[in-house]
Length: 360
Image (cartoon, rainbow, N blue to C red; front, side):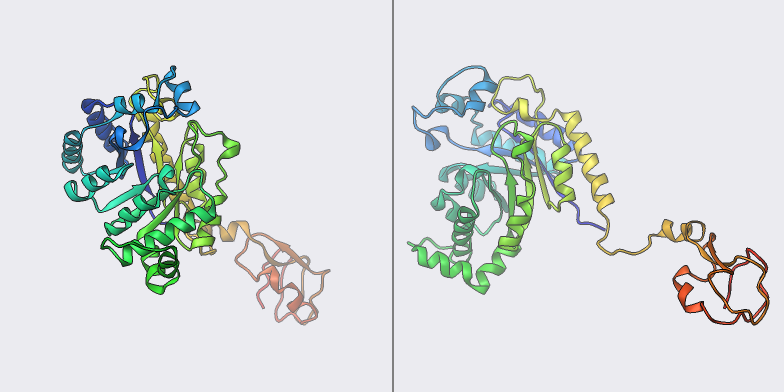
């Protein structure tokens, strides 16, 4: 049986800064059968300058051009609202997760909300000071790798290994990171606590830029579990990712794809999220075991589907078996055709009527 995929319903900022919409997203994620519902935690003034421009997809999806700061301030969810969301998650039995984009928000997730699992977003993978603070928390980490090269991922993993080994604040050097990454302890900590997520940072992501094969490249390069954060339309790609071995599937969802906001149009609605999760579970069933052997239902079909050695004509005792008096036909409960050459030239031990199964 294949391992159950961890499914993260990514609410992100699809609450538009409204606590009641955020609560409804939690409830819909739970109803859909997700394991985790994830939000984004940030203080807009801490993460962007006043004149930073939007990404093109953001202005396109929102339908207007404004600064990132203005947009993010509108999408910011208060720390007080986070406590309300965590309480709702606990009541429903779904894990609360959030991505921190700044140190203040990260401290809040760790110290106030007491999260034991964190996600490093793609945009912060080169923000190594923030990456280090994630690792020094001791939490399990999901590291998103959109826009990243293998070299950038390795650099982040070296910092994470160092942070796990040295959880107290220090002034590390690049050499310290390399030593931690190459150490037995560092590698063991990474393998037990870190999962890499492949993703394409575009909303929606074009199919020809998904590159699911990169999951295998990361797994081979770093010997770590991998998953997939999907920004494509629909749910075809997440199912393919599960078939490729993804241990985590993260998918954006929204209450209404027509709402104003940067991510709604690349998100599933609640019914679609539920359908995707159901199909992921079916895909897991279909993945099954790596052992190639007859299944229970196949064993029952063997006799009907396979063939046996049969007498092509009446064969008298002592007759030499040859290709002229032996045929191969169904059913498959006689001597296997794989013994055809072994029996050639041997003498029949008994009388066989034409069409009778050979039993020597």
